[in-house]
Length: 332
Image (cartoon, rainbow, N blue to C red; front, side, top):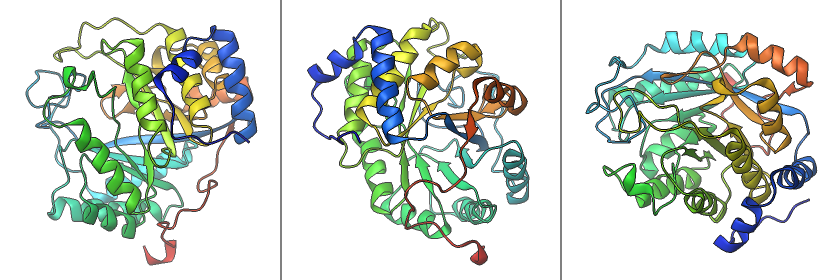
């Protein structure tokens, strides 16, 4: 098994990241085979339970209230509609269901109480339930854990050095504090970033170093490719070349051997052959369903066809190391 490290240097990561691509993929594949069931891929589904109107200025996000995009503001969904969406996702093969709300931070109000009810209800479907709701206090994280939340997503997005070029309404330290609050509550951490936002190779390397040098590696590391949206500051960004995505996935796999590396936003632009190289390089999770919050994504049926062609197997829920926060379903 691979050694788990939390003391990576920028020079060490550069030497991995800049390896010739096929050699890098081979090294990452060997690490992957040592630590995971090769060919097993988790299917996750992501639902926007509260859309638009966010006060943040994230340059990539069409849900920011200050940008003029086609995204319409929608209030928090009804619990029964969320449960129906989760059931449909499970039927489509998803074992994890993530609920996203366009909030800067969680507030202690009736909407948060409703989210706790949603967590309990989805947990009762025998799915890994995940949320991404913005910044969390320790007390709020504990409430989510008590409700049965399995994972919390809070991306660092990019390197600390490049961060202020993308977001000014919260700090990098704010993001790391939320990750710490989630970890202390016993919730599985999901944290990654986005490539294609004008960052350098060293920014990408720095982002991976931040994640790998946390006291515990995130259980999930989403690697997103920017999907430019008209009306946002990054609307005219150039598409990220395919090989750069593979390089990020492979480097993340080598640095964080036990983590799930999630092939996330931007997958709609990839062919089956290109996705196959991502899986070879260590990706072992995808988001399925026609949308990722507000951006297009491959549908369940097209992913089923890809799984059949590549001989991939959907991963069942709760097959990783048991989390102390999993709530028994009879209480829901």
